Each structure stands twice: as structure tokens, then as C-alpha cells.
Image (cartoon, rainbow, N blue to C red):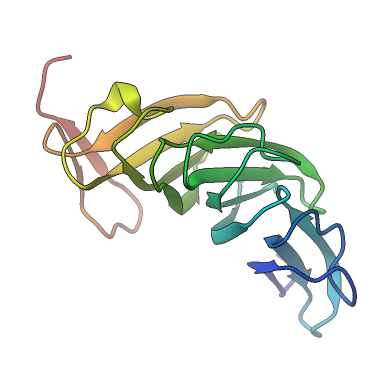
Length: 186
């Protein structure tokens, strides 16, 4: 909106331009204006490693980041296993609003996040067979894809589906519209 850019990366530094680093390697998010000045930055994470993979700005101006977390602690309120998809919600100045962990006892990660017109976001990624928040989805291979719609008010998950032989999502990639087709009646 101001000709700059918002970047999601990672850092284990606690000095220089990096502020609020919690653990060994955290999400580091910063906004840079068109003159390359850092307007704000913030770190989000636990006492272990978190890796940011995607970021988006929602229609209300808030910021959503997805990636992976490795342990419960700090701002990560749940740990299911080896790594989990971790979705962070921050206000337009980078202040932490809340987060959601989606995972199993194996390796999971958030790889996609996109704003929806109602202020919610759709997030997706990869999950592996195991216990955790994906157990109700079933499991169809070595790893499966998931999509979740998250509500900005309280970071609750509105809906979660697995991308497998039961659900088809197309076209991929899409510009303005996707079709989600269920091959079962339920």
C-alpha cells in the first residue's frame, strides 16, 4: 500500500535490525518502505526453530504468516510432533494477535496462505500420517495436502479439508477463483 514490501524470513540474531527474537531461529517479519527503510520488524516463535514459508496481507490490513514450528513454547501453544504447520496473525504494525498450530506426530508444514474477501484467510500445506489435528481427515499417502480457512477474530479454524482422492481443487494455479469438488455425498 505504501510502495514498500513486507518480508517473512527467519533469524537467530538478537541484535542489529532484529527485535524480539525468542528462540534459536524464529519467523522474522519486517516492512520496508520504498526508500529501503525498515518501518517495523518483529520475531515470532518458541525456544526452538520456526521457519516462515509464506506471508500475505489480509483485506483488513492484518498480516498472516505460515510455515513450520518444531516445539511447543513461547508463542507456539501446541506441538504435535517433529514439525507442525504454524500460522501467525499480526496486526498491520507487526504486533502478535494470535496463532494456530496444525499438525500430526510426523513432519507437517504450511506452504500457502491467501486472503479472502471476508477477512478470513485460506492456508494450505503438507501433513503426514499420525495423531494430531489432521487425524479426522484420513490419510492417503506418504504425505497429503491440506487446506484450512481461518477466522481473523480468534484464529479459529473455520474449515479444514484434505486434498486427496475425495476432494478435487482446481484450477491450480488459479487467478481469481477455484472450484472445490467433493466426490462423496458427506
